[in-house]
Amino acid sequence: MFMNAFFSMRHHFSVRSTAVIVLSCLSFGMTDSAQAQLVLKKRPAAPPSLKSAPTASKAPRPVDAIFVVVNDGVITYQELASRLQQLEKRLIAQGVALPPRAQLQSQLLDRMIVERVQLQMARESGIVADDAMLDRAMSGIAAQNKLSVPDLRMRMERDGISFADFREDIRREIVMQRLREREVDNKVQVTESEVDNYLAAESHAAVRHEDLNLAQILIHVPENAAPKQLAARRQRAEEALSQLKAGADFAQTAMAYSDSSDALRGGELGWRSQDRLPQLFLDAVAALKPGEVSNVIKSGNGFHIIKLIDRRTTSDGKADAPTVEQTHVRHILIKLNQVVSAAEARRKLLELKERLDHQAATFEELARLYSNDLSASKGGDLGWIYPGDTVPEFERAMNELKPGEISQPIESPFGFHLIQVLERKIDDVSQERVRQVVRRAIRERKIDEATEDWLHQLRDRAYVEFRTDDD
Image 1 (tube, rainbow, N blue to C red):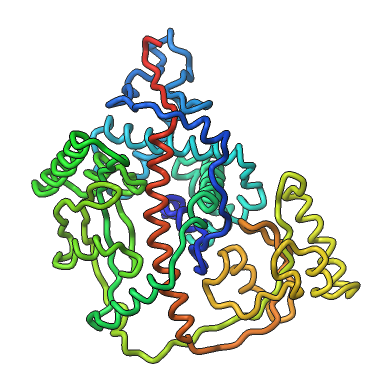
Image 2 (image 1 turned 45 degrees about the vertical axis):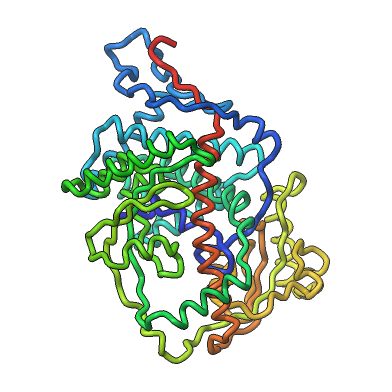
């Protein structure tokens, strides 16, 4: 179902390390103005119920009254009701048992609050997703479902889903992902000793390599929590575990209890290689059979309950070194800033491409003159690129080019690029490449953990005021 593509957008748009699907790009701290807005305020035990939302029979309340104030923005009754209806429709279509509506509303509202804070920060930072980027994202979602964009639209409208609302949902997700890339991803570092330790541990491990499909329930514990608060959070985790042992559905329980950003997906983490999972999780499921759940385990983020959905063997670790296709590529990069807009960057690169098409200049000359990348001094040459070494937008465009061809302007989180493929070759994976793969896997795992922590910090710092019928 195409809706699944949207609810896995974190991975679709994510930019991480040297991986194609998950590569990191920008790194700056939170702006002073953003920090000033994130005023710490103790959240109420429970928000007001949506049952008090405006209806035709309750004339005194405005049609779209404010439900929650979030920093300098608001979430309205109508927004929450609409999102709740969409969520319930999706979960029912997926055959997921719904938790009590009040619990589902509370989970959704918390996600909307965190979303709103991220969008506010992105707006202050000038992070946007223009129509061209959005169109490419929609094309990608359609392609994942083996549809054209018009067919995707027809399918959605047939299912009662607004295509225009869906586009705006995707736009928001792109913006939030670009913010996370800037605020989280590039701050995560992997040391050579971490790579050495991983390789050493792997060399002494059993030859059986597995991917694991896991789901989790996370009961978050705030930083510097008092003993009483810590005990209360553990009790909540034990309560969730008791329900699971009594036969409760894991996805339903996750939606009711979990503080993780994946709660509304039933806590599902999806298939991951072991090197992308914390050792704590691996230890927790080591003796489990598919379908079983762990006891409550403690991490730096809080208390977890892990479900092993399935496991699969990937290799015996003794195969010959695999071969991969490498691409020799160069580019011209125009970065966006307060002076250079997306339209200006695209226009400039179209001018440069026209000069290249008419052989009025060489690629090296134009790269040295105009590229905003360190490769400019080398004529834009990025050298030999392995799969996974560039951001997804760049790699997709690069893979579509034949040697000698030059792309149209391509947007990525770095800015706009002209890309030229020089040549391709098949090569064995070297020892250094093995280290790069390990470094990437460790980094992805650390980014997952850092992102979860960052989102909780945003929520804890945000000024949140729930409006009631008496306001």
